Length: 341
Image 1: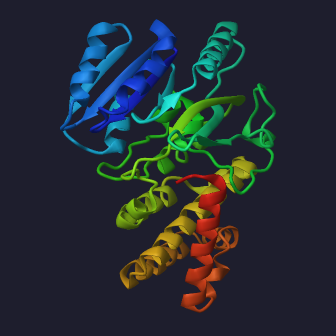
Image 2: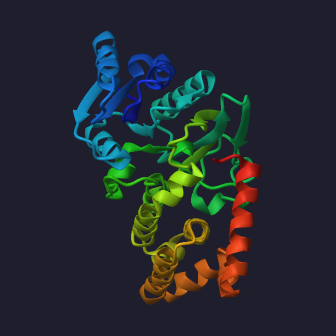
């Protein structure tokens, strides 16, 4: 039995891949590690094959044409044999002690036949190795630690708290039930991964462990500001995919607290998109942002009003130079305070 499938989408990751895979191997034959070599042009594929040869009962390798991060995750979902599913980016790693705690907790719950847990939530850490600094994102104020709960039991998120792919370990069946299929050749698809499956989750549990170590420091990193500005079109693609992935009105009837969180998440995504448009200072993208608001208003008036409220987009009604300065200043402050890029 494989308790967890770890999927490692990898593109030109020769500098980081060994650190990532070495951090996953302590799970032994209780886990499977699927390295998806996404058309790399360096030695990533060779390194991956070496691990598969050395650990044939743990490591599997898929070599494919380049399709982007989402494509790698899709392949992993399709091939996963583990009861639970975790994406670990090839330049990131996991903390060994936290990893073993999570794995043992999964075993304990499954062996007790107590309940089916659809989602494990844990902390993640923004880790700047070169600077020797880090910033932990936790959920202690949102969940009671180590207690099986539902969305009705959650408390309130602070401004710096939201779900990322890094904090979530889904039951594999939940991802498949949700119909999750991420767009190819697109960055920021982790926003879809951390959003679309949530309404299918009935039981969840929070472990206060710093499981995922998120490396910050590469110049070409997707969260690097210059990279984000260059890829605004992909930000729009992801924002629209999130908006169209779920029916918030239906979710609100079943679980008001989950709906509130999901509206907040949409608001954050639209706000980031607005900030990037302001940073680019390109009229083309500002027009595209107005078009996005128009589409949302026509699609769901209730959601439109909620997102407008939660994302503080009253700023957008200010004269353009002022609104741009406010948006950019807020973004710079958040980036410095929470060290997310």
